[in-house]
Length: 330
Ligand SMILES: O=P(O)(O)OC[C@H]1O[C@](O)(COP(=O)(O)O)[C@@H](O)[C@@H]1O
Ligand SMILES: [Mg+2]
Ligand SMILES: [Mg+2]
Image (tube, rainbow, N blue to C red):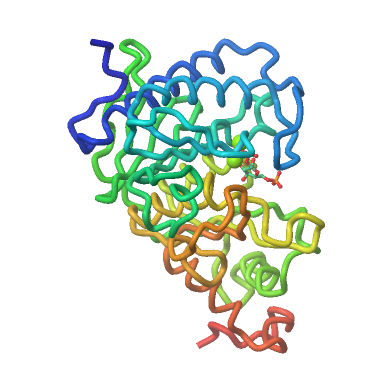
């Protein structure tokens, strides 16, 4: 019998084999990242037109090999154009962003792996092109100063930390709850001029701080690594926005529904937060294409709800300077 790579007592039995494979590959990847070397070397372009770095390809190979004998019938990877058939006897389908935050590889900033588990259907496409709410498990591994995994199987969120001595992920938090009072937002503000008006209005009001309609100062963060951003928000609250914008190719935002937004939305809802495309819950969406993108907003429920309200405001109100905007001024 091979050694356990993750403590299994809180993992549903039918998902344990797949989780052992994910944790084992994650621990191996953590070791590769720690060792360093030329992991950010450009090696090609994936089907989405994204530049691939050496570590993107290493991670993709590692997870595919690990999942091939773990009860998984279908694999969908951000790095592959089509689904990959693994074990015909497998009962699961796994979608994966093997390496999230690729632009940070050479800067030694936290990067991650995002995964999502569905019941397998007869074809690869049918296994993944379905309502996002049909996930039966989702999580991420963060390769940071500590290597940790946040995962949910539909009954709350658990946090595991990789123990460097045993090489096993050990339970560190049995029920991770998203704090609902943080005055922190995360957005790539260099795209301000390309954003839709409701997003500009929301951020304008945050930036106006105590002098604006929110009467409250806010802090800002942008790591450009969705996993690291999610980890911070799960630990200390706040809100994340990657809206659609007017740049070519960003009409539906940047992040991918199947590999990034659906699993993060599953975790965030399970931790008591909200995740939408600006208006509607991400988990209410039906995934229509493997590499489909979506605007993505998630975090503390009150903040996510407030952003949806900005989308419903009349044009005149949302375009007004914050000083004249009546919204939320009771
Ligand atoms: O560089 P930008 O436009 O700020 O985008 C950053 C976003 O892109 C991503 O790096 C996309 O993920 P990949 O690295 O898997 O392509 C997210 O982790 C991050 O939130
Ligand atoms: Mg990603
Ligand atoms: Mg990636």
